[in-house]
Length: 446
Image 1 (cartoon, rainbow, N blue to C red):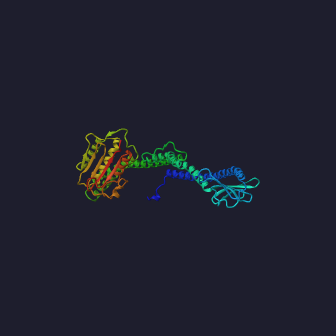
Image 2 (tube, rainbow, N blue to C red; image 1 turned 90 degrees about the vertical axis):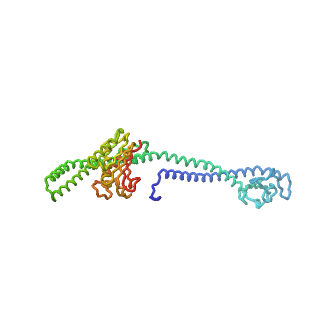
Image 3 (cartoon, rainbow, N blue to C red; image 1 turned 45 degrees about the vertical axis):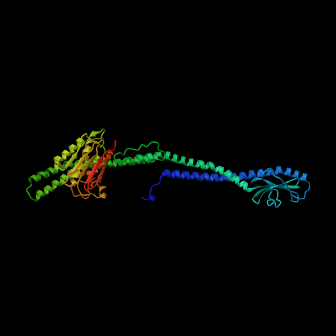
């Protein structure tokens, strides 16, 4: 699966979407607030400039009156050093001539008389106001750079809390989405933990209203699946069970026929029929074992020692004429497992039978049981390709073997392992060897 086909994370999408939406909303809100603050600052500065003009105007008129009708422009000295953003002014007479000016007034700003009101001249904000029935006119100027700097500082202080709060908000969104989507993860984990041996209804607590229909739909699906599997297992078990009686009767008649038939083609056909009937009987027995393994009930209520069970299985194979090929190693202190004794016997019988059937007949089959309950069955034989090895636990898979096996032994063992929570590991070549096959049943940790 490439990156483009990988499933998307709902939690990540929600957290990312909410975070980007919050950032965009805050940025738009701050931009609008910056516009409003800039407009309000302009009004405040204009009001301050107008009040300054109103305060300076009577003083300038008095100063002009006390100085007489001097033809030259008189400059008023400032108190202290000049500061950036300081307000400057000029006083004009009726003819528009500058008769009084602050010492640092830029005459380029006041080059032309202005009408009453506010004006922008040479990067300055100028307010003109008349007095004494139009005899005098005062023009007060303030640098616009001072206003821009004040606006930048004000808006900058507005954005500073945003820079501090935004990461906290994003972290809060991540924590919130994780907490609110926790039931989704719980529901997913509960579904993932179910298999064919546990199709009971889901009961994930704390689900939101939107997730309850999903849980209910999954429960209905598992109910239908449980009925289907039960019907399949029931049919397999019933069919195998019902076939045992007629097969036994037919086998008995065939064996009687063998006893009565003279040497010749008829007897050979009867021997062939007997072999096939025995094979069919073994297949029916395997199907019964598979039905039981897949139907559950392989776990016991308490631990039991499985070493004697494995010893009995070994004795059965010895009585069947395979004792010379078996090398059975049992732990001295026994091996306790929480598994149904009959299920363990079926497991061991199928693993050993698989090794005897498909292994090298000239080489012994090693069966080892550890104190922890790990059962290992190893046989010699050609190496099985890896792609074939993965299919061996599939029903009726025989890896191309021409032996008399049914192709169900490893499928039964795998079903029992799943039912007990254990692991069935297949390896070829066998560990520590250049050939052979090994099946290892490893119980789950207590």
